[in-house]
Length: 290
Ligand code: CAA
Ligand code: NAD
Image 1 (cartoon, rainbow, N blue to C red):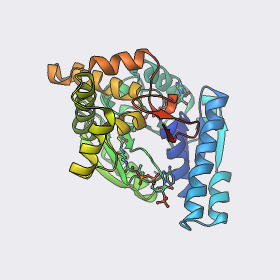
Image 2 (image 1 turned 120 degrees about the vertical axis):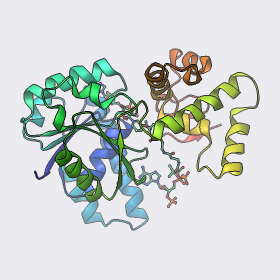
Image 3 (image 1 turned 180 degrees about the vertical axis):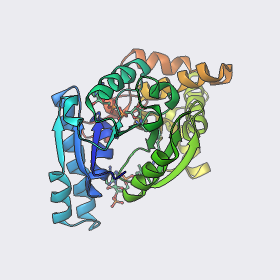
């Protein structure tokens, strides 16, 4: 099985990054979203990221142009018909992802592999929406995709050895380091990371310290590149909440209870960097202000 053409669904912060690294690695890419505006924003993010690499002389002008030329955009899932691998990176919601995979299963050639970039939803459950659970796998890229080395490769209950091998090799071709894990709530990365972010949010709610103070403690005290509240804003508070809910339901353990402050902020539309406000405020380019 050879991967030549990759479909990416969702042109948000993760999907645009995945499309970019795939195109930079020589794959033909089709990028889809439900909104034209999201496709436009996704392509802008890709151009900005390529420009940064250009300025730092990590890539040449020709490489940047070739990568951009390899990306086609669409609003129609039927354009994935001849893709060899489809990577889904839409909103972290099981029923929305499930409906999408049911549609894809009908329009994409049967030998193609389906991968989800979900942060926490069980791969085995998502695979059950399709007729190809042995060709279904988790391909969990980290944010920001163009910079982060890890791809957590999650085997569902029925994922075949061959599909796992092909997906690990594809991640390596994209310049990433794949790590194979099994399908349990939050996998490894978010089972360990997200409860820490939730605890930092709980500390804000209890008035233990300001977001700035908590972030400084973790940056200077633990050498984390970003404090937990900056990171929660960066990931998206809606995504952080969705992951905590999967952990809470999946383990049935109250230690994974989402912070009430996190819930309230999401209800108020404060989703972090992507909405312009979370624990901090951001300008249109996503830079912190104030
Ligand atoms: N593309 C290309 N270059 C980029 C870039 C992008 N998307 N984003 C940043 N850069 C470049 C910048 O231009 C900058 O270059 P210079 O050093 O030449 O100026 C360099 O990277 C560093 O960027 P910044 O100075 O803006 O910021 P920084 O030093 O804080 O580094 C960071 C940025 C790499 C994101 C760092 O803050 C970091 O590692 N943060 C933690 C990220 C993390 O934990 N990610 C995992 C999130 S969890 C997840 O992904 C899983 C999930 O399911 C939720
Ligand atoms: P985002 O909100 O930035 O982007 C989601 C995009 O999906 C939007 O452009 C939206 O228009 C589009 N979309 C929604 N429903 C769609 C549908 N039915 N068909 C096509 N497009 C649709 O979200 P994100 O941060 O990029 O997260 C995407 C996925 O990646 C989620 O499953 C998330 O858990 C996972 N993830 C996120 C991070 C992170 O740090 N943000 C890291 C790793 C994995």
